Image (tube, rainbow, N blue to C red; front, side, top):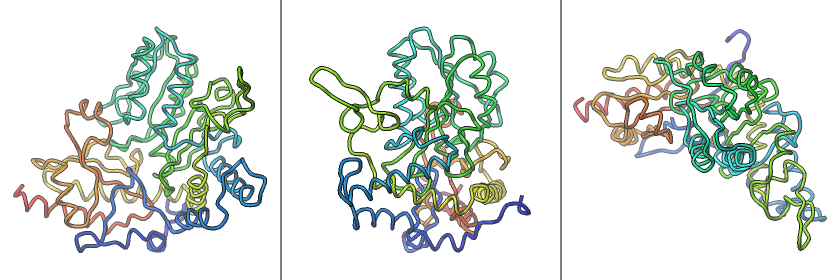
Length: 414
């Protein structure tokens, strides 16, 4: 892999991230929570600043210079994201607040329009609440049955069970491309092919995939793909829903109001074309412009290189954590099928206590159920600790994590 994919210059990359220079409790920050939300490079911060400082004006509403210039930047951002995820056209890219809104949009608009009592939805046991609760609510409202692809003991999806789940009643299949807890990477293509064979639409939660590896939605042939900007160097308040043209055109709008209409009279309304039909009101255009800058940054690095770097980091983290007495890694231990997150427990130390003690050493990790309570119930765990990595993570930070864990064990005499 190293012979064909260039390595990331992590030391240079880190110079672009001001937050990484901060100190916590008098110690250098070791930020290992990028799966929750990534840090932002100066290129993205500058894009936000410039959009507000120089020619700020609402988009698609003015015929004057500032509005037209900002509209151009907003449209360019959509085009950048289109290329980044391999979508066929900008019309297939819907801007939303985050992936949670994207998945709710599909559940409310597609689900309530096309699914009915007696239909079935197939999910997996490892889903984030954002790709679980919307379908649970829909199922209760409409009399729809939810079925789940189980996990193997290794923490991967048991796809050998998929065919028995895919009955003619299944109208929709949804799953995470990469698990935010187990780090499990699922190849979407065989799942999508088998789901389409029974006539089901497929929704892929790409929150933990799009920031970390190449994604081509046309090659995958998924019907929907959701991602959040704040997990891929962009600002909060902006996300993306990709949808196939025919499906988006058939769906009613998620919300109504300004800009998403073509015409309104006192007794009728016609909707605008996609994707604007799903973008009611003033959009988060400044955030979209900054997300475009984030996509530029990642594209310049090369997503193959991003994935190769994270594989190296997670492999080293697995190796080092395995040395710690009482440590248990949750999920796959093969870095080829694990994304840039390592979830674990330390015997006799609650993850929240561990997180607090690590913070004293300047090491920031996530502790809790990571918005995946059903998965933790399935695993028989009340909570776990998670260290997650990104383009700016150095191997020395893994060493700092392990050293901090040993100090926590000593403090608690475990």
